[in-house]
Length: 515
Ligand SMILES: CCCCCCCCCCCCCCCC(=O)SCCNC(=O)CCNC(=O)[C@H](O)C(C)(C)COP(=O)(O)OP(=O)(O)OC[C@H]1O[C@@H](n2cnc3c(N)ncnc32)[C@H](O)[C@@H]1OP(=O)(O)O
Ligand SMILES: NC(=O)C1=CN([C@@H]2O[C@H](COP(=O)(O)OP(=O)(O)OC[C@H]3O[C@@H](n4cnc5c(N)ncnc54)[C@H](OP(=O)(O)O)[C@@H]3O)[C@@H](O)[C@H]2O)C=CC1
Image (cartoon, rainbow, N blue to C red; front, side, top):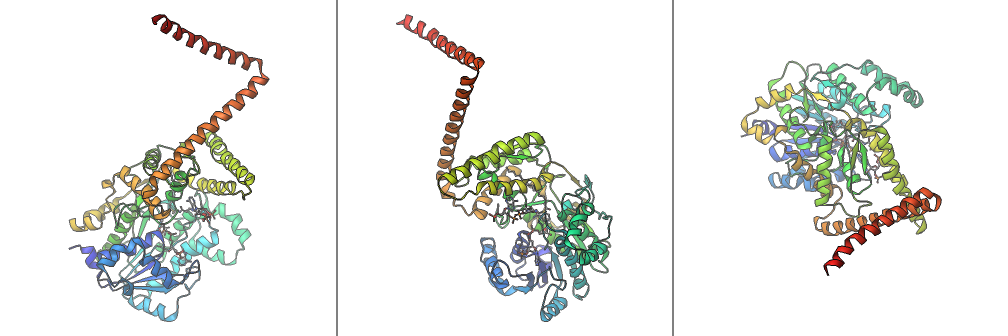
């Protein structure tokens, strides 16, 4: 019997960010392995015209939750969606709901965050710092609380090269930042943002670092742990391989490459691609929840959930396998044939941006205009290149994260728990994982049917022929123009033609003799 699964039985668990990528997988695993848990409270806001109940209904009826319904048929009754918006200082939770949360919660998993790299500092602070502070305040009023697990990111200290499982202080205290956000106007915040984030690349990593400081400072008597995952990718094994449902991290770029929009990226092929499957992160998170509540470590432990130091894969290998999977299972209706080149040189990358991205977009828009349609490709391409430029920071560097606490925890688990809550990335076969990831993007994100693969392959063949035709035409036009203008080009051309003629005559002569 799994000790971890048994621990969660009968428990009331509060999850923030349950509608997000990681939150859904966390809920799924909890219900599947501990169907006897008492209740999962989730803080949800209405979104995109859906009420909180509709959002929960949609999640529970998704493919991800199919297995859960078999082991926990009354899952609908065990999930309690609480209306909440973390943008409000009191989360806008009703008094009754708040009372219930305060008196019943046993474990908190705090996953909610804004993960946008370009978020305005005010909003990023509100979500990633102030909301964490508020939640800690709530936690301190929960008499039954056994553990508070905070999800941070391995990149919260990406300004360092070697990162230990400790909290590194930021120069300005989080409390001062929170206070200043209340009275500074947007223009001034914009001005001071680069100074505040310093050598971090964006407001996301900066505010996640501030969030960790808040956790440390406000922990009081709580049992707290922090988990720092690196780049979270599709599921490795559970509940099935390749599940993914948003465009963050590599997923969006896999689509852009598979559809032929993204043909080159400024990335260092030898840099470590520190991906970590979402189910691995969730398994570690649940194990940490159990360990923190049962063993009550004296200080706040930080767990790195990374792959680079135990089972490294680099961007070159990842790119190669992504392309190999496109060969087997191409995406439908591609704009161009997939071909993602990695170059670490800025000038080469700008050249390829002009030739492989902007020029085809302009030509396509010209074609749209000619056929009476609205041009749109240049806009799409500009957006994509902006996204790529924001991710470039992470694909041109390598980091070393120490994993002592994570390895210590692994050794504390029973063999059964090591199996059920496996977070040992040494067992991960990268080529298989990346292939499943790409197939998962095709199935679960693009909703493409595998039966459409032959047609997609045909489409790529047509694109290849168009490409050859286009290049030949371009070459002939350029050559014709050159010959018309330059005596030297004409001489070269006559030399090549006469050489070919002599070459062919030489072979014709002996064959004629034989006859
Ligand atoms: C050969 C293959 C090589 C693979 C090579 C992989 C390298 C991959 C390195 C990752 C490295 C992360 C390392 C940090 C890991 C954490 O710790 S944090 C979690 C990760 N967080 C993220 O990835 C967030 C990144 N995204 C953003 O910040 C924002 O979406 C952006 C990039 C600033 C774009 O903002 P925006 O222009 O306002 O656009 P937004 O409204 O978000 O979306 C606009 C359109 O772009 C699309 N889009 C959004 N995100 C993406 C994306 N990532 N890609 C493509 N399209 C996207 C949307 O679907 C949307 O399309 P439409 O609905 O309009 O058709
Ligand atoms: N994805 C990654 O690569 C990595 C993620 N992480 C961390 O993991 C955690 C989960 O990330 P992930 O699941 O990928 O992110 P998602 O963007 O998929 O999910 C974010 C969650 O936070 C919720 N949220 C955001 N704003 C509010 C709000 N104002 N009120 C209520 N809820 C809100 C979202 O709700 P809604 O659905 O309503 O928007 C959603 O449930 C985050 O803490 C992130 O920093 C760490 C490393 C890498």
